Length: 414
Image (tube, rainbow, N blue to C red; front, side):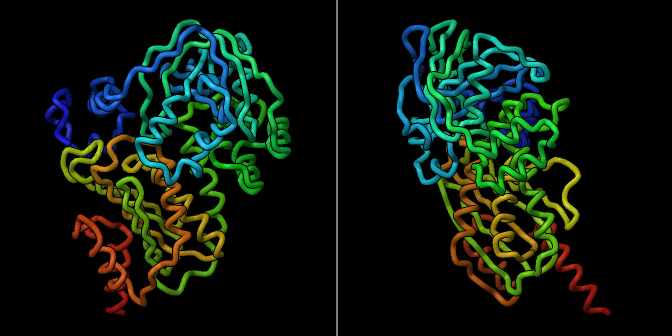
């Protein structure tokens, strides 16, 4: 990918990758790279000002103008219970990139403006949004729009592609949603903190995507602290919260006895996961190869945490860090084992449009289901990884590898 002509010369490839179109690090106020990708998609039109369709179920809460944001139901202009696959990351995994964009682009973001702290009902839109957030299965609803839809789909690094946003004047759910008992109980209980509620939902088998909907809709937490949460923030909040809960156990499980290497590739995202005998620690490295979505030149970024965990946001890898960490913690928790974890991800030109951090979570989850290669020493494991990656010097930027090698040198003199 050539550098976009609208991006200032001082903006490095690393800056674009750290920003991912979300943080305005270039100062332009918009992302030229994302805009260029959006412009390649055809405009989508919905005739008339009424929409009747089946929501996966899914909702969307924006972040621009916070604390007053656009929020509302997400649905296609047709009725079909098969839309459920469009609302679950685990169902999207395995589809081709163009197929995902094509299908998800039919999901319209119908919305009204709300103050996240004190949302007030507007034509049933808020009620419909909250009912969808609680639902377990697709729900049919009617939405009255303020204008015809003539826009392009939305692309974002954090969430899966979505269709155009349009103003909703009224909304009505036309059937009784199926609500899991645990969801109903925790929504009604206004004395339970959101972190505790998310942990209980996870233990009950509620999908991560459904938990994100509940948090976004402002349906979790104690009464005085409940508020709507922008979708982009709720995605990382759920991954982080559930991950920290699993980490409390994993830290004190027995350490693994060998070096284990897991591998998986999906849509130009190549993952190599190294589990190292030792106390819990986590590091993620990303190489955005020249020609990948945000990268006009090879660029490597990394974030890490020690046994105690992070105290600040992983602002290099951003949301993908927490998604990958959750996937590995799930694996270790199931095995009742602990380890130091090093994830190396290479993103190639095949990943020509952002699909959301779910790609990271689901690809790593699938990797951890596979039989690993096992090694008796770290250098053999590192050599095996190095033979499969683009950047042969990748390990020089690893904090975990550096610390292990330094510790060994100190031990040699004792």
